[in-house]
Image (tube, rainbow, N blue to C red):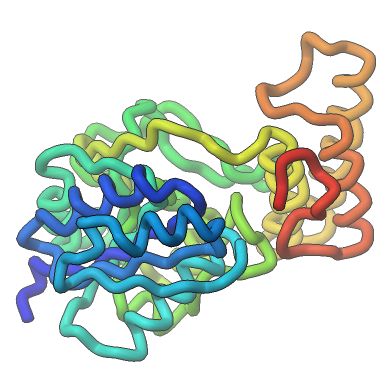
Length: 298
């Protein structure tokens, strides 16, 4: 099968109409030969709407029902497992959430990038589309996954981790480094995968101009804050050691205290209850799904 073809995995949760639009956009591409929709335990009505949508009637579209909200990373893993276990001839697989909208020419640009190596001669194992922020994904040893101003004008810029809004992974890379670490549930799992890919000798690339739009953030702010704070400590401990993780943990505690005393210092998703629980769960080494007590999580 041609290297210009790929499989696509879309992770869905309770947004059937948005997912149907995304499925239709991807399945219309001549490059997509197989599309796997992973439903992450949607409500009965949303799952029914998804099952009966015209987009899922396409012969190359499959619906994989997980039955529970397992998180973005674990949901992707179920799709990756299906792809790896049943060879369809594609060397590359794309991953996106249910509302990602690749712009015209994006898949072509991503596939073009798979045919090249980085300036250092490393093969690309992970590639991602451009979210349009003009920044480069970077992992700081204390602050964790952040971005900084773009450091290259190349069409493919080597970065530390891919954007999960639309990313490609090679079969060779995944077979060598494994899938997402499911302890993260969601947030920081792309950074972990990117660091593991680099350690195995693969480059991670961001394809400038290959635009993708992700118009909505549906996760409640308390969940976002909890996962970002908890998972950043886990990521740093895993890759940079307990000393750097202790520094990041101290920063989390300091930011909580400062946010209580000085509300103007709070980050956009700042939530006191979420941060207290993140601190507690880091100390207890409790990973995976966020606690049900946080606002908005079911």
